[in-house]
Image (cartoon, rainbow, N blue to C red):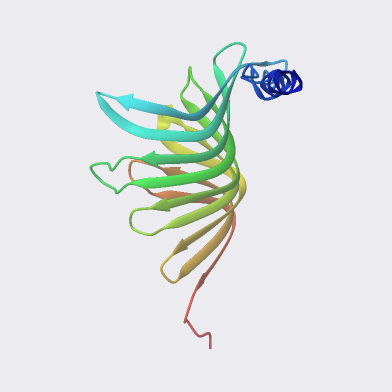
Length: 177
């Protein structure tokens, strides 16, 4: 009798258990955010060809659906008839779907296929003009040339830059007399 009670107790204690349901994830979105997407992709297409592709680790859409707040951004511009590809990275930004404009913020780094680089803390891509614009300090590097300026306009199609004010440039290896 003791053996039977022991077997029943062992089966009851070690028997099949009901699988526990996972606890619901409680990730509160901010009041103005309607949806969050991970590894989001955005494109601008003109005349059937992709002008640029933007990948963000996270995109949070506001309730209007017109604005997406982005983080950890990587943006690639296609080659044009006159210039090579451009790659842009930034810590965060905002994509405006109606205008296709992108405001990039935090450690913005621009690299052209020819090796030219720009670094700034904030730059706006204006889609209708295919331009990057900033009024912040920008550092430009091309081979031995390093240039800093306050403000810049970069035409994506031609890859020509115009620096606005307080321009200071230096050439490495050049000795002054």
